[in-house]
Image 1 (cartoon, helix red, strand yellow):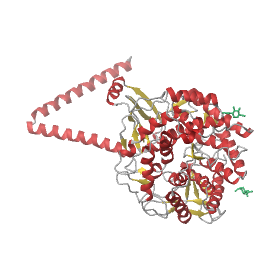
Image 2: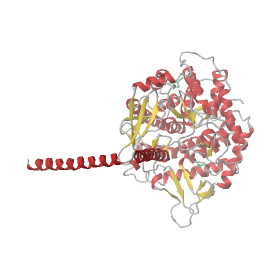
Image 3: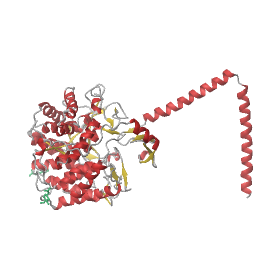
Image 4: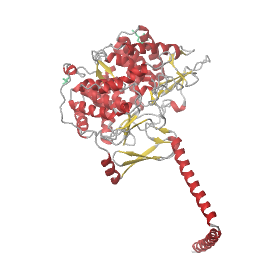
Length: 599
Ligand SMILES: *[C@@H]1O[C@H](CO)[C@@H](O)[C@H](O)[C@H]1NC(C)=O
Ligand SMILES: *[C@@H]1O[C@H](CO)[C@@H](O)[C@H](O)[C@H]1NC(C)=O
């Protein structure tokens, strides 16, 4: 009681002083002349404006992750769909970049958007297109004629991943297998679309039928939502086209055409042949990534297989023409021994020549699609092959080094501006041996295969030297002759997203050379995935490949784990090396096989 009384008294005193000081302030204000008062008001509102502008600008400057639409530490509201607003909020330590999305429904905004946004075309699911000749003549392949025990283990892994996704994230892009929640990125059910052909190849008919049902009735492409042209092309367009070719089911082709129309504005809306990186699927507004004016070189040059295939399948050249213009244009740009900087500007059509040259992120699949386009078009377009062969020579000349200790061959990077060599290799680069072997299988020089074999060995070391037998995202190489280990990993690079690139190369190398060592390596890696990445409701990316006691699960199952990693493992373990024959199919950058044409 006493305590309460004291507080009351104290409060009373404080409010007394407050009232007195307010009164005297008001008195002083009234004593000022009108000019003085106006002046003070003016200054106050200017300061207000400056504060608002400052906060806005500093918000813009914060590093922005375009993949996940996150600003570091700053909650961001983005418009999604029709009046669906999503707020990304940091959870716990903002540095750890753990965000959770709270989707807020705003019915009024939803109605307004609906009025503003005219659908591009009514989805015509039922319409049956005339059968495209070339494909129809081919027999459907049977991938499950003889399935061995290792393949059965991979099928079980797929079923395990799928059942977690089906239960907790159905229709969303990804599953967070530990928190048992969905994760959305483009809102296109990525895991489903990416898995269609894997299910066909594994003979999972029931699962495929359920997925088809969702494609028919759940996949809405008329989304008021910005998507990345490249990612949606390789995953969704590629996934739909591949499913169409394997099953001859026109539903997939209809959806692919509808999507192609929505992606096309990236090309038609650009003043140069270089497309913008992002497009709104419903309003068709295009723009550069939020973090800068440029498109990634690998992104704009990794669309052509899919757009060409779409054009050929629906018999309308506009998709192929738009995408192939990029290849022609890039062919004419100045390069460094066939190697390209990782950024290119859609307004000027020129490379940002001061940016990095590398075969990892943002550079990788430029080289891949040169040779794959050449193969897709029946080896009739010489400049694609010539640019590729020149680039491989450039890689040898400028990017290849060996470690002094064990003579491991690796591919480094040239830093932007200075062109200093950095002895660092992304796991992504481990796609290259497969591509080199593929070119060799189609008649390119034998030394391409030799380079591939050397690089396979190094990529294998990035797995085998880690106590988990899983490779980190990035590996550094020791160029000093100091007796220390050849490879080392920085703390921030020690994660593993269950990426497919090395498994993909193992499959190409096995098919093309027949060497079963590549199967053995793949089996070891698959067992590590089972041991460290499998959780009760799926498979998860891990944060640390260096500590078998605590791999720091990241609670994310990427769609490429189902579309690529597991598919390539299944194909790799087949007793029939040519189960998916590289002389009949060209496989896109997301593991989706497309037919090879005569020209
Ligand atoms: C493929 O072969 C397997 C094993 O003989 C058979 O069970 C399956 O029905 C076949 N699938 C098709 C699509 O013919
Ligand atoms: C198969 O590949 C492994 C690893 O590169 C190599 O050591 C081995 O000699 C190869 N075997 C044959 C028969 O070429």
